Image (cartoon, rainbow, N blue to C red):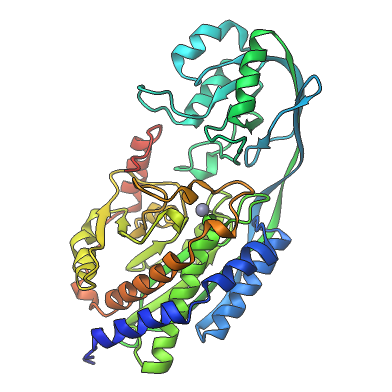
Length: 457
Ligand SMILES: [Zn+2]
């Protein structure tokens, strides 16, 4: 079947609908405010997936459903640190083991080798304070490597100093997520603010003692991805995937991280479903939409999606995460072979969008479970470009509220993604460069790149 598509009319309709029919503001209010924090497996997540499912049904997607899986999860209760009567600003690391400790504090600087050499004889059995930031002018050492070095030296817990200011503290992750199965903290770790970090460093010199209590537990619970699709009329079974995680860390409304990406998935789907309903324009390949659970818990939701749906590789899986960084600038691929092909489609859109390829495999969001299987996985710029909006600095903290999400820019994302997906879906399978990436080769590359800091500019 040959289809003549009037791209000018299509683009006009898509952008008109993405802008004037937008539900971005409405979705943000529901997800971030009416529902709020959406830690995977929590009541908040349950409400969110039900809401997204209803939206998918309402826009007329096919195959809409919640896909349940057993999540390996964690919960925390009280998390508190005190020096005498002073309560220290504090959040536990994600998946922090429970502890009740008391002892003198040691200032471990940045946790780099020369810093540890200065205090090596004082570390055993102690609680260390460590800057989370990279040491200036020094080859960057990932925080998880520095934490492992502290564990090796006998430290029993770490208070990490968040580099943000204004007493902001974020939830952080332990381990190297390039291998999520083994990525765990070697000991209890918590984060304090830059301001209280300074106090702790001073008090370390005076030999003052810190009391640290974290209540937490590990357990299993059901969690859900949400899926729906628009079937392709030319090459059914050939798939493009657009997804983003709907979950958040504890206590965070997740405006930037990641109501922004979730809403862009919903809006792109809505616009393309509307195009089909009103103008009768179908995609050539199947367009699969998904919101993933548990990105914040080692990508367990997207990993489940890949297990269920990607035994045959989709042509491309685009992941949307933290879109408050700025306007859509283009697409970033994990592997190079599609670069010119995708760039060719972006060029037909006439907006100067660029296709780039990451020089390292990136395990910071839900494109990772896809690329790990050798699937062509892409993400957008996220927080990683110069000139990004300050709001993109908010993610794993309670202040990542609905106002951190940029409504007008999300309208643009939905319009551009709809244009791009529709174009890609109408490229015949034989025109796509062949993906020869083997899972084993990815594994070797990941192994080689472990311990490095992924290039972000
Ligand atoms: Zn995220």
